[in-house]
Image (cartoon, rainbow, N blue to C red; front, top):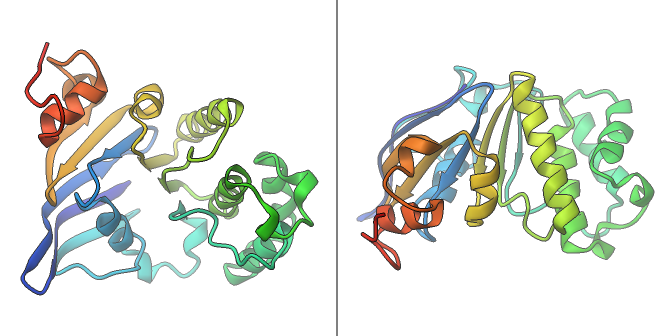
Length: 238
């Protein structure tokens, strides 16, 4: 389980997050939605130990990320693409990541095959397309066979086949009891895969719960999003 409780973050006089609380449950895909500047990235960065909160807690399996000895065995994440140096090969990048977390070497070949990059294992990352970079980022997230996945815009740059593939991958992960926290601006993709939703606006959670509950009274998830965040068409319930 991913537990965000009373999370607040301030930068000087500016409040970035204010008492943000929600849980992402095992066996379910939780969509994390919000307009630009709403606080999604700040929440995920705190969850993954890249920033510190002013107040509150962010736990994965009951523990804060910095206390995990081999974090990739507990949570796989993808923020801002693959994170690989352009001069490294795909295999070289994943090999380094595996060694840093005590992950067996054979997992590198397995995840490259899993994400469809086996044929590009020795290609330098600088030659990758955007979609290939996304697949490499997903490979790194899957490397440690983690129970939880935290993914920011995972379908960005993927073609229709790749989008369908990642839906299947994430559903397989949750069917096996895993947890997925998925942040995306693509409403149609979130609607197609999410079981639960968390909507954040202005640093505060404005709605959370099963998809049917959050979208009740609206024609589509997009309509619900704008209605809840005060964007275009806000208040146009149907």
